[in-house]
Amino acid sequence: MRVMTQVAMVMNLDKCIGCHTCSVTCKQAWTNRQGTEYVWFNNVETLPGQGYPRRWEDQERWKGGWERTRSGKLRLRSGSRLKRLGNLFANPDLPEISDYYQPWTYEYKNLTEAPAGDDLPTARPVDTITGAPIDKIEWGPNWDDNLGGAVEHGPRDPIVEKIRDEVGEKIRFEFEQSFMFYLPRLCEHCLNPACVSSCPSGAMYKRSEDGIVLVDQDQCRGWRMCVSSCPYKKVYFNHSTGKAEKCTFCFPRIEVGMPTVCSETCVGRMRYLGVMLYDADKVAQAAAVEDEHDLYPSQLECFLDPHDPSVQAAARAAGITEEWLEAARRSPVYDLIATYQVALPLHPEYRTMPMVWYVPPLSPVVEAVAASGHDGEDAGNLFGAIDAMRIPVEYLAEILTAGDTDVVDAVLHRMAAMRAYMRRINLGEDRDET
Ligand code: SF4
Ligand code: SF4
Image 1 (cartoon, rainbow, N blue to C red):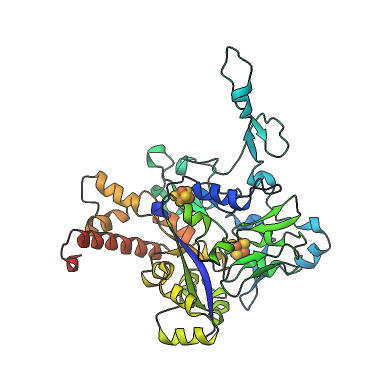
Image 2: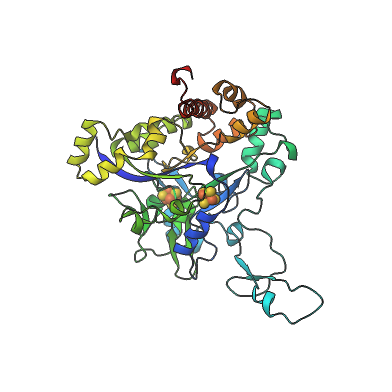
């Protein structure tokens, strides 16, 4: 057993209200600079939707990016590294600015300084960088906000189309049948980070003390292999400095015991931060698992129980401090991921072993039961409604379990049971009846 530590995050999708406060505060803290106008280390996507950058989940689009070696490590596809090293501009797998968006702002001054006239003054859109007026804005993050599954052609086409073929009637592209929810995203600070494996300059690295993945700005040569190799598209190119930049997990705050900016400012209080202990020897094996459906349980097996005395002894022998061990024992992230098993990784099939996990949304089930006039806190009612949930379990499974609906179904049932159980406790009723 080789014990290592990792700061990690779990987000409870039931509690995200899509207010984007996390994105705005993150931007103010980290990317409010020249060269990063289009960059959102944290963004909140509307699902179903194309995401940011547009169609980032369509891995076929970035197929020149990465591949898995026999040992489970990720690397640039054979032959492509040398070829690309010879020509900076030969990296064909980069999102273009139009996939992110051409950042714009508004001519707010016109609202107060326009000369008096018959018409109300307007604040026309202007390019953030050049200040030039923009006639037509064609795309931006959350462009498809609030359209949900009602758009027949557009949002996450490959996934939605695939599910539609498989489950036919379950997804109807009609407004009254539409569904939507929010997916906040940041760098996953993966256990097996493709960005680190693909960096030709050795600039991208994963800190051994807390697992945070960072870019050494002095080492970065701007090859952008990290941008093409990251399957989550969470490394960005600063066009002013010519270097790669990414979410730092707010490491200066983490180092002094403070939460990340996005966690601290989250209006929905949906973000949980914590320390995980994992077995580094198991990580390579887990990434090499053949069956995609086994990737989630394999990653789960890498995590170590911080309450286990033998794990604690191994951690101390590995130099992990008492402070970190205490943080691991008190980690809500460990409880949600490993003890209760209600959190799931985002796209485990990408094999980078992400460390930002998600509790799938149960609230549509609760609302549906309540709307039908029944008790929305009753486990039996909730269990019965999960099959008829407006957000198809198949859709959640495509995002969180490489398509394994049984795992998502089990999580939703577990959450329904916990909800009913907690209600009984709160009402002082007999807990054993649930
Ligand atoms: Fe690297 Fe992308 Fe994983 Fe972040 S999400 S650690 S940028 S591979
Ligand atoms: Fe969701 Fe919290 Fe971000 Fe608001 S601040 S969009 S509730 S994650």
